[in-house]
Image (cartoon, rainbow, N blue to C red):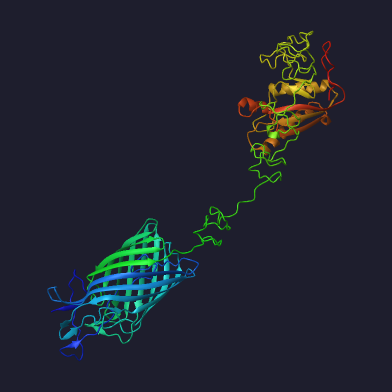
Length: 618
């Protein structure tokens, strides 16, 4: 016995004859909306399922066309499986539609099927005549839809939406393009993205007009609709490829073959800017009405991406250089939408931020040289303090960093500059021997320490022999001009203001103590602490202050009247050597003793005959 069924070439399933009552030998069957494929709302990455993309704070529209071809969605088959008559043999349909997303939560859509080609042939079975489509071209039932996002985001693991579709009878019943009545379908949809995987699902119920009839003993009535899809996301989600499975079943004839068409479709969509194109092909898995032997789909949509403002700062993500951090508008595209930088720290309040200020603790002036920017020139010699070896005494420029900005010195007034004078504190005579230049000639051992003047680094102050020629014959401490000079450094524990125990530091301090005891006329002595340039300037200054104070405390503990002593720390501000070598840095880590006031001149060596008188002590 011949059978009427949907066009599936892989399975042969029996279809009962539609028995009309009463019926004549040539009764004629009426048509219905045969095609069970309903395109997804525009903007989806699937053909039949919905990706639920409702992003965008501003209204966002999508427009598109889905073109589809069906082969034999309805035919009469002989018992041997051959086709007696393809009632609907070939169908070419375009679905024109659009959607509009509002408030990131609501979407409305519309779709109109336009049958461009619809042909078949008349078939008769058991006295019932099944006519081919009455028109080769016709409209299908127009569809309106509305969906609301309940929770989730389109780029999240799970988004759920609730909505409904409504079909109005614009389609031709005689062309198998319409039901001839209104139908509605509430539905629940879900979609998500998990890493490279995208998926979607749908369950709904279609309610048809009470006037709906049977076709070939199969009820055309209320039914259950469902569908699932899953696929891979490629090229950052611009390409989605995977299968889709969708079907329906009539409640009155649930999951019977002819009333439960089921299709599978393998397709892919690719996004190019605001355009999205898709291509897919599939077949019916069972011979239900409307499940074709072959279905081919192609789509083209205009689906612009959402205008997002993730951080809510009023600058859209596409223009926002910092889309996840709220900021402010800027004409600079690299800063537009970014938070403003924090206020610059300016410790000395000179208008130059610490990050640019070479002297962050001194109120200075702006310069183009990063070494002096924010610094001052205290001695007004035109050389900024960081570059001035004598920042408190005006002097000429010099290529030697140790002399730059320093005045020529001749403290004994003998006409021989201190830098060339072997006896800078005692007037002498100029000679060609650098060991005796500027020294008195009548006293080969003026200080009587047994070391000839030409070998004595301190020929006017008795000292002990030392293999270091710069210390040979020098005491540990002695007065020169307005300073008590020491030949060895007071040593401290690393990064602390604790005097290192042992004879090295003790001998130096005891020598200074002896000078103060032998010179009660020194009424005010300033102890200065200095550091190298390693570490922060503020911390170094505090450390130098603490070390100078520790020396004062040692002298007071050993009998010096506290009123005779003061202390100050200069940190790294007054180097006497370059800080780019360990030897230079060690020289800069020092304690100095400066005589501020003295009641009478200190002990001076006797002048050479004919030499000018020695200058008075400060």
